[in-house]
Amino acid sequence: MTKISRRFLSSAMVGTLALALTACSAADDADAELAGDAIAAIPAPDGQQWTDVVAVTDEGGYLVGNPDAPLKLVEYASHTCGACANFAINGGPSLKKDYVSTGVVSLELRNLVRDPIDLTIATLVRCGQPENMQPLSDQAWVALNDIFANLNANGAAYEAASSLPTNQRFVAIGEAAGLIDFFAARGLSSEQARSCLADGANIEAIAERSQQQSQELGVNSTPTFFLNGAKLEVNQWPGLEPVLQRAGAR
Image 1: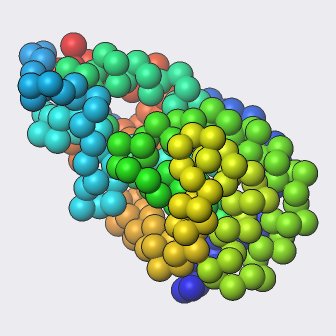
Image 2: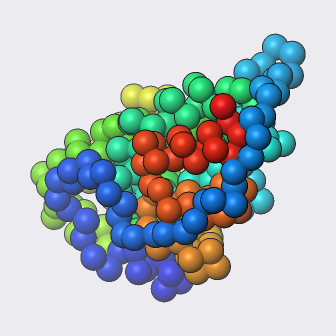
């Protein structure tokens, strides 16, 4: 693997993680220019709901909702970030139910990879059908403290994984963190998970894409939100919902 991916194995990420309300770094920008008139709901295609419509974007993100929504929300998130877990638990359901479902807002989730556990989870949530990526991500965030508890109990196995060949390394990390069993209980077979975690080229591509987009867009914290290309200064639902409403989602 390139040194991009090796960097994510250079330091251990073992320890219980509290679900913090603050971002996992700082990110600021203004959203005043996004203000607009109320936008009427846009009907979904016959027999569908917008929350069931999923597309993989050119940037490698997973977009839920109307691909032509007038308000395009992008979230850069890390799977080992407590603030991202907090948003997934306390903001994600309302965002999808009240805004994505109307066809006015789309939500695209992109990975900002911080560490080997993050990269392992990012690989697994992308391993199955596209429509499963965001739901599996949400379930992993809900269980984040349990995942780190598994790592605490299997720290030696996690540390040993860094010296394994690429096609074994992330499988070993998935085993040490209990992630293979976790996702198997949610529909991703153990065989499929192991196959994805042995695909070094795909794992490296996820890491490289994360680093490139982080540098190009100035994303250095998680969660970071963009609305119609403008980086927002908010990172939790109480701040984000008013921005969406001022932009016309109301």
